[in-house]
Length: 271
Image (tube, rainbow, N blue to C red; front, side, top):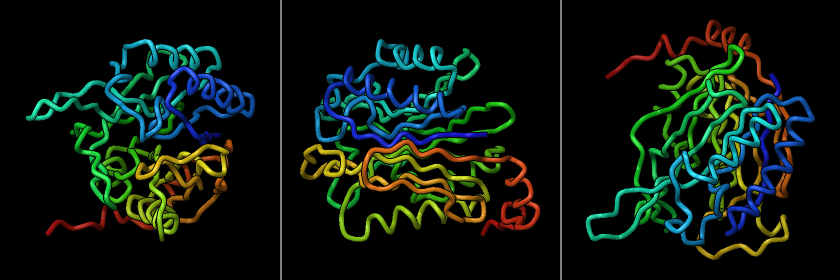
């Protein structure tokens, strides 16, 4: 199956970001992809107020994404923000949500980011409510798990997806820049593939400077380098810094063969 990572740089305007999504969805569909993955924070980039644009997954922004999926006959995965419960001190919060919708109603799921980015001087939990449950969808015999950005540092989520039958886990991200961060991004994608013997498609926001956009100081706004990693941890395709549509192929038979050859899921012990 051909899948695509739409490595874009989003801004503050959800409508402008939808227009960008339309361009890349068309390109992915024209290239024969069955799934196109957009980054975390596709609806609105980090560094801008999030509560004013948060809406339910039945709201107008999400419905526009569904129309794109129907129009181009493709599954779309994209990061948005849904309303959260205010904090104990009354501070408004959102939920960092992935929406996965297909051309037909049988694929329509949402995943709320479980692990919040309270690291490297950024505290996502100040304004974001954590999710609790993994989410998956199936398409033409391929099972896809969902994860978001900082989740990639936590092997158990990926192992849980694999134990539930996932062949591929999709990881939309808006990775924070900084010394060593690109190396960590690459290493973590490869490690999670090896932990769980599945493909990892990690789709990040493009680097703002490479996209001709001013970066927002202190916000995790992306480093590019979206990539597909094989179940044996081999990078199969990788984008550069700038906006790009990355096309790649996944094969569930390769996952099955790898799990027979290296049965880490069977061999694992609890202690």
